[in-house]
Length: 305
Image (tube, rainbow, N blue to C red; front, side, top):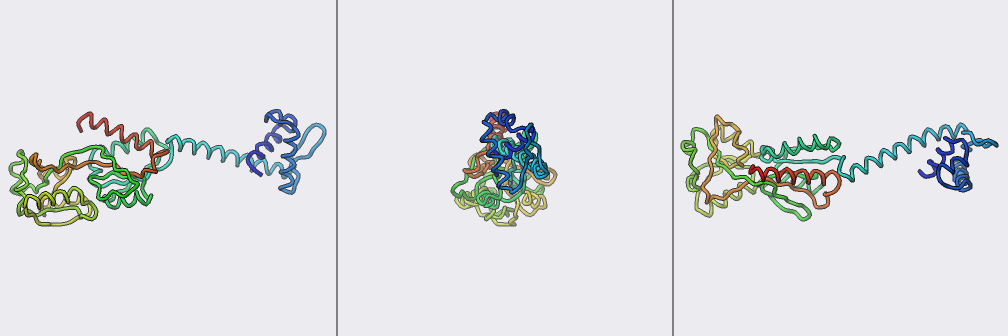
């Protein structure tokens, strides 16, 4: 017994007449009668009482009518949901983000726009470091993530640079380097300083680049602390534990305890905002999400944000 037969059965039950049901279905009467007989033989019970004026449901037929109507309604609803999924109008997306990516106004804005314009797409958000996000996207536990500098680029993943912002030196307010906050910082001024960095296995990009640049220019720095999240290192800078390097969008944190200074132009330490997702996950709601992210990024770029 299949959905086609159930539709035939309901048409006969509704009209009370096999010939009229056949006309409504656009088919001949004999094939329709054969299908009804086949259903009765499969179930082992009569579904209709036959009489000269038409047919009438048996008790079994009444029971089947309820079940068949519910099943066809559920099937129709399922098909509608799947069609909406294919169009990218419904579904769920797991989105990860690092704390520094979340600090950029772009990240909350794109999530807010998705919820407003596509309320039937559920966003499941979580905060992780860059390594954890990359691993989760590879494994399919997340569909995408926002991070800064990729820590690794496994095959099958797309790392799309959306925006780029400068990096700033975060300085405790009572530190000597906080005095002349209007002037850019030369890398040599970090010689002998203690740094607070995000633990490198989790987010090596920005910090690894800084350490490599210091080593190249023979600037000696010490590690004051390693933390799991970028916003934690700003907290430690505010506490006077050491200096750190952060994306410019983080500079609003602890304004009374932390001074943020630009580096000299020769110190090229940028902090990109990157979207990562799997190449195979570009259909349905993910296509909608990616397109919205790209359009918003273009608006930010045009506005110089």
